[in-house]
Length: 138
Image 1: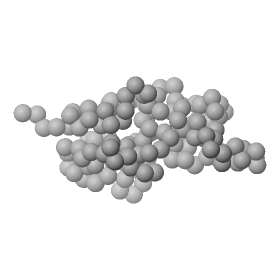
Image 2 (image 1 turned 180 degrees about the horizontal axis):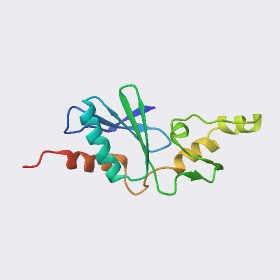
Image 3 (image 1 turned 180 degrees about the vertical axis):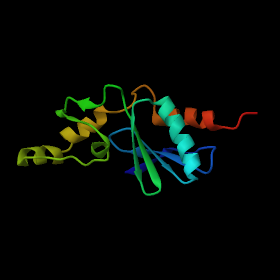
């Protein structure tokens, strides 16, 4: 997952950096800062986006913000898209499923895109709102 440089911002709490990742699903990575600062940033993101999955890997937190309808995709209707799938790990049972998964614009990529948060708002706009809510009040 690559960071989209146009959508990366330090949050005004404990040196936490929030980055939008270049990934088919809507993904924000939180890194740096204290555990308390990350928890506060995560709390604000979860308030803004009540449908989400959170994955903690080492010192990074991945927040997959999703649409309320994004739990199941027409591309793979028998699979509930959870955290492991949002990270890109899919289980296939047959050679045909493997071949379909490896094609460009595969069912897996379409399924991840189907979970996306909101086509009318970018994650950069979401992070700007989160940053504003974390800014110290005068």
